[in-house]
Image (cartoon, rainbow, N blue to C red; front, side, top):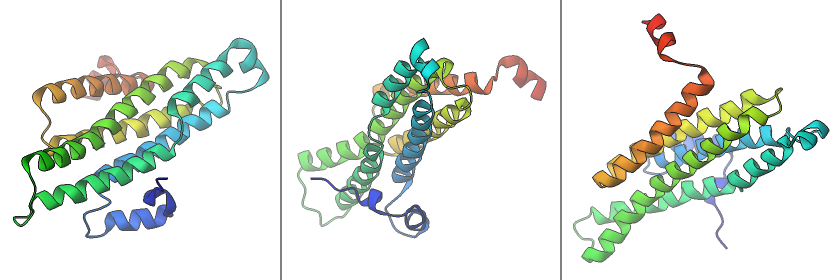
Length: 202
């Protein structure tokens, strides 16, 4: 059974490790942990949408659907470990003495690309689910659901940066950019940013 190294650390230890001059954890791990915190904030909002009136008007059912979508937050911490493992393996391919076949090298590179790609896709899916849930959220805690969107959005953008350094195809980049546009729109909607607001700032 897989045991997450990231999950076993204190937050302080993870932050210290991230700040240290060492290859892992790196940006991919930071993105995954940020996504875990974002998912947790949204899950809390759903957990508080379980009042009697929420059950009567169907909001509680929508909250349960969101909790099912987000699922086990440990999956994000596992993603941080997978990113670290993929990067360590990738480093080995850069060494001249590495005796790797073309297929072995390609497999390692594919895993290094898949880790941030999967994280970005998961963040997008969760954000869309939170956005759908927001109108039904307990009005006393909607800000926490929105915090969940923002943290997941930050994690998605961070994951996208990691995707770019792993040489995605043009088709992959195009598809992920579409997901990033959805995420941007979701953030702008909850921030109530529109063109008029932007013009006033300018």
